[in-house]
Image (cartoon, rainbow, N blue to C red; front, top):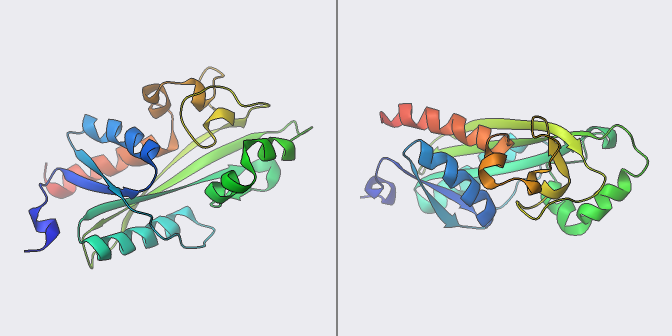
Length: 198
């Protein structure tokens, strides 16, 4: 019997090393009666301009390794004034340039519109084709970091519909009401419940 055959139908695994992503996603999946398990795995990232392709390749890799119903997520931040930079390289840019570096690039820039795009890929064990779900959050880049919650670019991203606060100034539930990641996970949960006949 393969490992995935032993997994209860309401359980799915998120392969990631980012516990913050897991905690946000778990709050969404719980509302749908699904159990999200954290599979702490450093998934190799395909170098590509499309977050969906990166997530798909990661999900295939994780499913082949673990033979479990697995999710892999990839998110990009696209800043219009910087021609979409950092895009799918957001994680690397955050590590190397940081929030201060992004804000320096935008010094004197009036148009600060930006958006997050998340791609969430699901593979139901070895040999399965990935199914991709996406979500976007539009807003703008603030002039300085604000807030202590969230992670990543949250202190400088002000989402539309968020009363002028950054994601980092919101509770996890408030962020989930607006975020790109939550939209992708809600789409997945609705599909998954139908897929499993739940």
